[in-house]
Length: 189
Image (cartoon, rainbow, N blue to C red; front, side, top):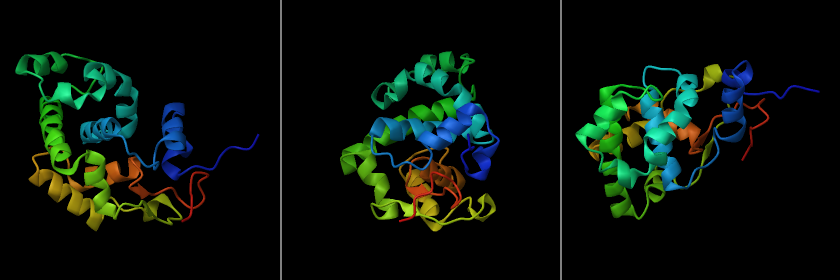
């Protein structure tokens, strides 16, 4: 049986990382709950590896009410302290607090645009940006689009949304398709 050719970061990765690459990374997201999940997980990743976050993903789903941003927006200080004691998530006070702050900002974006999905796809003109990288070394860590998204999210009160985090979010959710041209997931325009 021939091994699938994957993007460099997923070639020798764990089975969980490979499954994520094969089934999710770069696939367009349109569901607001999924958007909030990725926004939370990408922010939690700051300073850590994506593998660490993937291994805690189910813990996050349980701890944060399956990313129900309506509930999370109402989390009390006591609930946030309880989360800080949960070994199944990243126990960083600022990252936990930012999830609550981001849920509140997320609801404001929904109120203004109808959905977070409508809001965020505007940053790429409503269509995925399909790149044609031959190697992972060519893939940038940020772009003018991630700069604009980061700036706008910060203006709206979101936390842990620097341009590098925003570009990772864009890659994960299919706003940008950065599968390398030799990867079996690569789909030219």
